Amino acid sequence: MNYADYPVVLLENVQNTFQKLRNKVKENDDILRIVKDENLELKIEYTRKGYDFKFSVANPNYSNNHVSFKVLHLPSSNREKGLFNMPIISSSKEEILNRFNHWLNILKKYENISIHPKDKVLRDYENRFFQVFSFLDDKSDDKALSFKNRTLLNIFIDKTIGFLVADDSIEDSEEKNEIIEELKELNKYLPQLTQGQIKKRIAVLYSRIYFQGVDIINWIVKEGKSVGFGQILIEGFKGLMGG
Image (cartoon, rainbow, N blue to C red; front, top):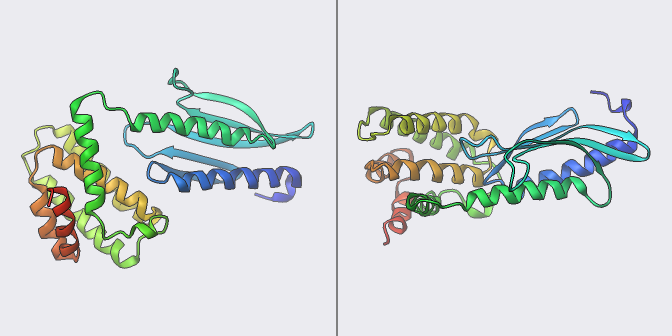
């Protein structure tokens, strides 16, 4: 695209608005990711599998001394699951950011929903597995994984997929197949994810495997050793098992 086709006041507004949104995604990259950032459009998605929640800002227009954007987000509110779809004027009142924060607060409420006992159990497992994979330095959660660790993690995830394919102890075949597909997707997008995002997704997936009653812990330690994560994982699992 040619920026010369647009007035500077519009481009400056777009630049400022998009940067604020990128910063918010970075602050919440355990549950959010940017899936499109080009041609004056920014699209953000909720990372939980099975949720088609999204927020997009596009089609900026300058008219009557105001810049407006077409804003879409799903869900639209706490009361409605439908799509919010309307133009919003961006000004010093930061309407776009306020709308984004409204959407983000809805997602955080979904994150905290625990209707059935298993919801709380899975949440607890997620928190524990998040700590287990401590080879990812918390101080670097907003950075990409090193090439060495990414390569090792690629191998480790491939081995996990092979383990699940061969394992017949998971009675819920739909859940098993879904976990396998999500592991493949994680492996594919590792180069594009921050360490914080990777840890969050690993925690979610391996807690789901563990919840199915699969003897995954001994296997993880054994295979972790083979790819260089062994001792760190052993120490991490001491915390998972309570010492």
